[in-house]
Image (cartoon, rainbow, N blue to C red; front, side, top):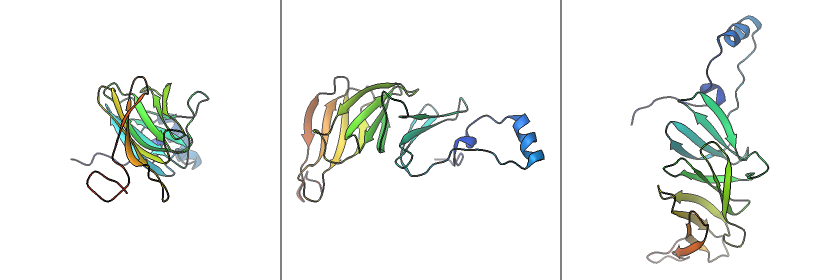
Length: 178
């Protein structure tokens, strides 16, 4: 691993406008940047960095190669409420574990909402998600709660959203979670 850069906000990725730099120098105006409030998880696909921000309720996208910044989950079709764990498949589709919706929200690489996996009846307190590179299986961590036995990993068909099986249960033995 080699240190490459630090990203504090959108200004660290967007292409610099020479006219804007001169204006800021002459007027003393500061550069505007949308930063990170409460980053939770990160996923990367071909130089595009996805960061879930549970306080701002979006996934913030820092596209280094294209010099772009945008947000995912701020539209009417696939709004996010509390994005936590995230992952991407080989095609760049983004899978977001949303704790408030108790579902995994799926978007294209460019942020177009595709589908929802799960829902309130499937999860108690989901926190993390991972997807196979081919997108066929989605594994979701449900951390249950203090009075819940639902401490498990739930496995879904990544295309249809059908629940396939669970891994583990609450406990302290082999293959059990707490």
